[in-house]
Amino acid sequence: MHGMVYRIRNGSAAAALALAFTTSLGSAQSPAHFHIGHAAEAFRGTPDGMGLLPTAIAEAEIAHQHATLAGRDPSSLEGMQRHMAHVIHAMDASRVESGPGMGYGVIAAAERAAQHTELAAASEGASDAVKTHSVHVATAARSAVAHAEQAVELAEGIQTAESATDAAEMLTELTGLTDAILNGVDADGNGRVGWQEGEGGLAQAATHMGLIKRAEGLGN
Image (cartoon, rainbow, N blue to C red; front, side, top):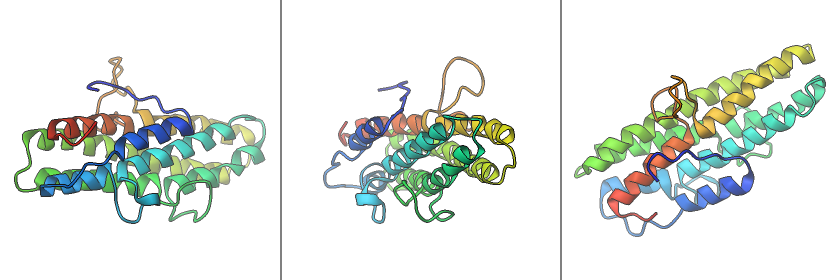
């Protein structure tokens, strides 16, 4: 699993990855495992009680899908604008209350996943593996949050664009951001996507969460 870069391109892929993260962790025996469970397995208030990181991934997949759909006809301003509320809803459900998203939002889910991973690392008795990889998970998740916030701004810009040309230019950037949220981006041009700030995405957060779970004996 180390070094794996997920390519999430459709709903079934997102569901499969979410399923991997919702594998039961069993009875948490430590405060660190309790918080890992919130980030990776289950959290009250998420859709179907999913873990925070799987929720972020599923919402990001929906946002990417609708950004892609918006680009099917870049000559149609109306067509591009039609999908922007859907993108925003999946990114931040507090801004657009209804849509095809799950109603939680990438931003809230990824930020809370980062917080609970950090709480795991700060817990009494946390292992070196938890302390090390929690930094990687939280950094990658927060990079996804930063990209999601930029994506919301672009989507709102497309909603108020006055020409298809302007909207299409913003949409190209938006689609790139939704891909970066999911899969990260090779920001330093070294041919690899790492967990570092500005480069990591939800796939990198998922990889390092998987390393925590493996080290802690918490399932696959």
